[in-house]
Image (cartoon, rainbow, N blue to C red):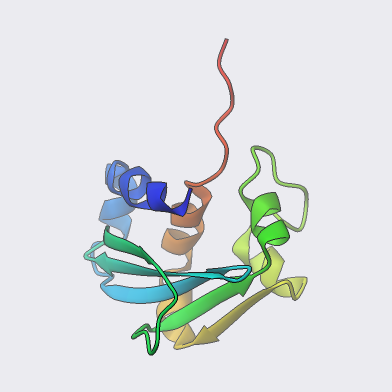
Length: 122
């Protein structure tokens, strides 16, 4: 599922434009699985699954599989609908150079929300 992040973000011209000054790499930890996500000028250039020996990243976002599953559900429950809500509930840990994360918070919120289950249209 995380592999779909690259296409979903890069297909959103508004989101790419919002991140046009963002070039970084960060770790996304989903339970025991770690992903290294590289961004260049708002476009995701790679999503690589770990394990890694010494990954180079600006920061890391770490949460359990259950918490990410709630965040990525079609209609996340209150407290699981936003990255900052997860941090406030202490189920998401943000570690590392948080200046990069906070300066581009809206980009990261919208990018990670791209993995939410889509509503079925009838």
